[in-house]
Length: 496
Ligand code: TAP
View 1 (tube, protein in one colour):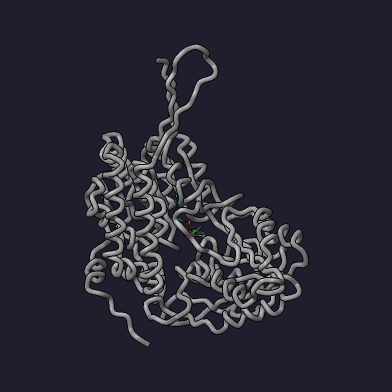
View 2: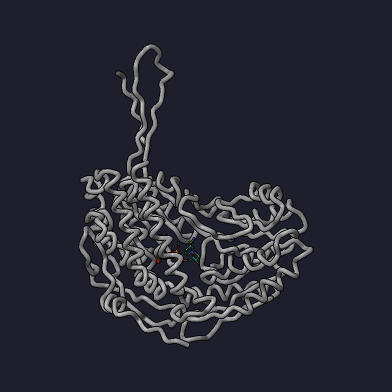
């Protein structure tokens, strides 16, 4: 096994506490507090990060407010904003090695997949919204209520104002990009709060944004606890919009906190996404696809395919196929190349996932693969786990586990499987595996979820809206739809 050696640049970066960015200035917390940042592959402390106080939060919101009200960003021409966003994308590619190393270190994401997947994807997110800057349009309308007089009527799309962007730990860079890029394209000023566990790539991204030319005060970074400063941001009367990705439970708290000034809220929350394999599917592809859908990033993906419904005629074959893949997978530190699956984010999360598997076992699920913790190099590892013969009375079927745990159930008919797939508080995503296009599209229409894949799972694209039905959220990320959520719509009626 190779032993990872930190690059000199990252070593230098992590030698100092990660700092807050407020009004273009990097600083420690006003009360000097820091939190520790762990490497989930080894359990070691790799850095410390400033822990913003309430007064730091006030200063960051005030800086964003000032920059917005002064028009430091929104009054640049759309083309000027677009060029700066494009440059952020270029810088992300240029600093891709460093960025991928940071994601590997605190989020437990293997280097190669991040360097060649998430880094270019985040860069393309900035380029995608760079293109939209010059295409934010209103419309002209015609009046019917007042005859025989001339009117000129039009709508304007205006930036919503100060946006608080609260990001989770499972995709620190990409999820931050999904929020920051459309907010900046619309002309907003932002306060970004990454998850406590994963501040490293956000700090680096903020440096690149300043280098690209985003003015001081337009982008502010607060590191620290969600329950204190995240809550303050959601409550703050000078914040006009909060965009949150994370658990459904915290999403509901954000709604409560946002009530004070009725700020606009968009939420990308949990999921328990079903995958349906019909009897006529290409089974090799479906089995391989189902395994990838649940075990990528150790299942810590909001759209992970965590419930698998298989037609009864092929049920045992599919359970065996996915279990064989799970049993063959290698699990180890993200800092070492060659492992199929890395760690879970923290010891607490590992224990929570394991307890949920134990509950499933106690409720009568058959463990077809995995089910155990892996004691390796001090990190937080769990075997890829397949629980067969489950049913909808079990907690493992109903609750989001957010780990490498698949539950499998048989079905007889399309009507039955649609009812089972929809029997969930969540409605984020689903996939359907069949060679019958009619069956595929009928099922897609019947499933209550924000994104459906047919014969694939979790293929993302910046142009494709992404978000949930039911308790999986409000609003959409990506596409023009996300951009609109950072705007207000104004109608102007002028009598000529
Ligand atoms: P959350 O607690 O929801 O954390 C997500 C983000 O919200 C973090 O930045 C967090 O900050 C912040 N936050 C926490 N409490 C807040 C509050 N009261 N007001 C404003 N912001 C707040 O998620 P978690 O604890 O990291 O994970 C718990 C479960 O959430 C997971 O097991 C999984 O089921 C789900 N989850 C879902 C997603 C997606 S993509 N849908 C992503 C992550 C987790 P701190 O980091 O400082 O707490």
